[in-house]
Amino acid sequence: MSVAEAGVTRKAVERTTRGQQVRELGFRAALLFSLSFGFLALAVLLIDVILDGASLISYDFLTRFPSQIFPERSGISSALQGTLYLMVLTAVFIVPVGLATAVYLEEYADRERWWNQLVEVNIQNLAAVPSIVYGILGLTFIVRGALDLGAVLLAGALTLGLLVLPVVIVVAREAIRAVPSSIREGSMALGATQWQTIWKQTLPGALPGIATGVILALSRAIGETAPLILVGAIAFVPFNPDPNPAEGQYSAIPITILSSVSNPDRDVQALASGAIIVLLAILLVMNAGAVYLRNRYEQKW
Amino acid sequence: MQENVTQDPEERQRDASASGAPAVPSTRDGQVQTQALEAKGQKATGERKPIFGLEKVGVAYGGVPAVREVDFPIYQHQITALIGPSGCGKSTLIRCLNRMNDLIPAAKVTGKVNYHGEDLYGSDVDPVQVRKRIGMVFQKPNPFPKSIYDNIAFGPRVLGQKGDMDEIVESALRRGALWDEVKDRLKTNAFGMSGGQQQRLCIARALATDPDVILMDEPCSALDPISTGRIEDLMLELRENYSIVIVTHNMQQAARVSNMTAFFTVELDEDEKHRTGRVVEYDDTEKIFTNPSDDRTEAYVTGKVG
Image (cartoon, rainbow over all chains, first blue to last red; front, side, top):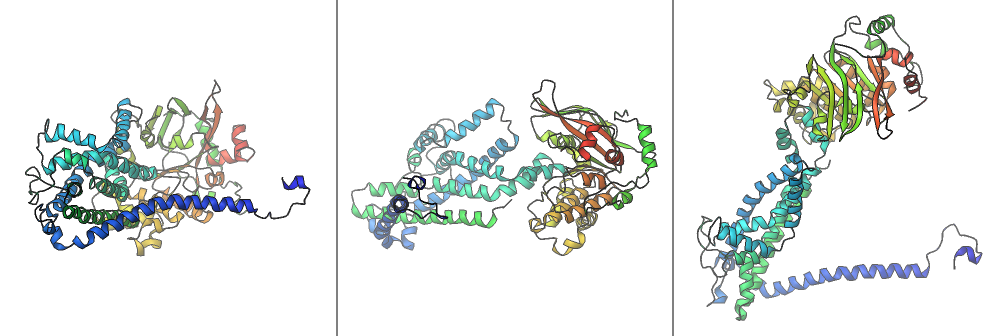
């Protein structure tokens, strides 16, 4: 029943009705309920892992090699170094390739052309391809087949690189696009060539965004397990990775975690919690770095 | 070079030499100001050297014409104003003069743009070389996200200019009437400057590469009247050594600073589908604002339309 129908004179400010208040409250409760799902799940996971694994974390844990016979003296040295080495190599691979692709697509490609459109659609779809498919790709073309590198760290890094390359390209393109065209025009109007404009104006302006994207891409790569299993990373490697990435066997933290939790021995299973804490710590540092870069260097246009 | 303007050249020159101190009303303070016009004077009235010759110039974006059949000369050491309502193609046209339209893939320029008698769009002309000689200042100040010093030094550096960079920077900032304001903070970020200072920085940046011509695309439209006044004073100074072409929406500005004015209008095409810009009248600024030949010009400059 509306105010007018009731014949009541309109007040200058209508009071909130009881029903509105209830609806408002109910809506907020629903939002908080949804929020609590994600938050609680994460909290439970963290607490559980820390309770199980915190006692394991020590210098020895990081420097010892895995041992199935003496799990209490086991460590993740080979997996930790393997993961760090993988990340460095992956970064070395994806930064130049991803950047060059992004620069081409943003600054040079004529979007009217069908082949450029095809590349764009491809990249968007590649970002959604399951990681295990990349593992098979890596196994077929990098470990065996065309490159025939064998089950070495370099093969793992290239496979992980391929996996996150679409992410890097998409983020780098967005960062490049965020540099206003007035900066490009200003540079070109001074007689700078397109290459000088890209190298001295566009890329420096886009760098914070690109760096953030690369870090986020790496933090996706660092947790990937399936493709590494396929390209031959091994769980128990009693030696650190060979400095030459095209030589020798290697391990990685996700592989250690997987093999530990699937081991029937409870002591070995506990190792997984320790490895998870180390992995989460690395992730946290990387993401904090990304946030810092973004806040410190991001350009407000 | 053939001039295709609404008036024959001899008659126009007589007009120009006859007008000593024309009184063009300026509404800046609500009173008649003749000072600016007197100050700018006519340099070498009898013999103006054309620097650009436009012959049937047209620009189309993706096949849709934005401006067409532009035919007039632009003279050296003068300020040439392009005025007209929005969408009349004056910004599009000014971007032809340093081949900035090349950056828009869909844009196509027809006709001939001569610069010192050479076809700017000739097959062997490198647009980068063109832009070294013909600088441009944009509507919105667009300093680079760098220090004031590096903003100025960018042009000379990419062009590989020899010489003491400190001197080049100081000289450009002096010519841009900015030196005294910024000499103590050359290393600070240019984004910390006021809008007017930023725009003068952009002018100084263009001057640092020693261009021949400076194109200004509505350089004051984002600035307050005081900053606008300073930039206008600067333009009058710069006219001694450079040729300036300015697009402006501000008719008083055109009247205050320019020697020649081209009035553009928008017309519906024959097939009534597209709106295309055309030049209605090109003449001495005094003539355009006091005694235009075309009724449409008169209606526009007196504020009856637009």
